[in-house]
Amino acid sequence: MAELQIGDRIKVKERSNYTLSGWEGEVMEVKEDPKGWIIIKADKTGYRMAFPESELEKL
Image 1 (cartoon, helix red, strand yellow):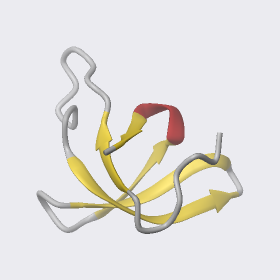
Image 2: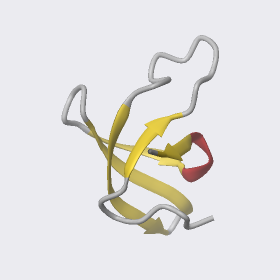
Image 3: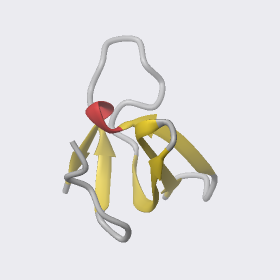
């Protein structure tokens, strides 16, 4: 993992019945603990949210 870096533009991967699918944002932080988690700032709301890196794709 660790493909994403601070400042990268991302999109939440599509998943059926998942409200946040397709949301876009910017990587704000790459966590070391717990490893593999990314903090993003969502464009739609401006909120900071945490996702496993495996659920995000780089734009």
